[in-house]
Length: 403
Image: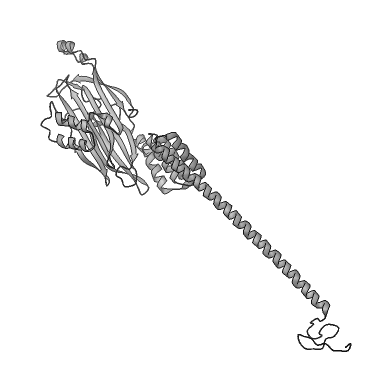
């Protein structure tokens, strides 16, 4: 037994001193235990590494879940503020609506929607300057091209038109009588020409194409007339944003003459919303019953379609006379008024054939209002002396807001 030879299990050579002289493979109980010990140690390390990996994966999953839940909660808060803002806007609680849109912006400053909705709100309450501020901030935070185009549209009047063409101011303006040179009258009234330029402006989707347009109401204080002094005429201009530029699409001569056209004056331009459309409406009425006998009327009902004003009813040119039963266009005007649910005005037009608006309270939004009346007329003294000073003067009130 003691001299029994042992051979290498790996290569078959005779073992010496517990190890193969050929391949070095060990033999004997102590060497196998060492190998087992090493295997056990490696297995423990593997288990530890696997455990650490599992823990890390589990931790990452927990962090991802926390992040997702936090993001979902943030999105939920954002959506809630947008929904509340819309709800308060419909209820005309503008302060609470604005607070919710501002809260949504605080949650996600890079989201476009709350800036746009807040700008809509400020436009709704006639604060375009605040709308421009909101859009400017939105452009900076989001880089939105659509918002930049809208911002350019909102600032075009202040930054371009007013510096170039001037701006009318609200107030009372005096018009004086003077010796006339015309065939029909020995006395005439001189219009007040102290104002010119932008009277008012409005941004809306006038044509229903999903993009806003800029409506500008402009006063030309040097409107030429044949053989007479300059008059004042009001124009409508429509601008659109095209290829990052603001472009004038169309212009319409709306009311003429105004601001000193007669002993009494009654003019206005307003918006009327009906059947999903926006109508631009207005009329001017000047009557001369002190120095002449007659009235001058101009009127319009327009829509804006495919880049152009489209007249639905109204006068092509101002009409004048002491009575208007000869005017055939009154019927179309009355029919259109009925269609817009302005039945009181329609009935009046059918009675006197004068194509003008008188029930201004039916307007959805007034943009310009001009009224004038004679002050200081001393009829007896004028008849006795014929002196112009006894005719007094006409005071004209121009309103562009706060109707």
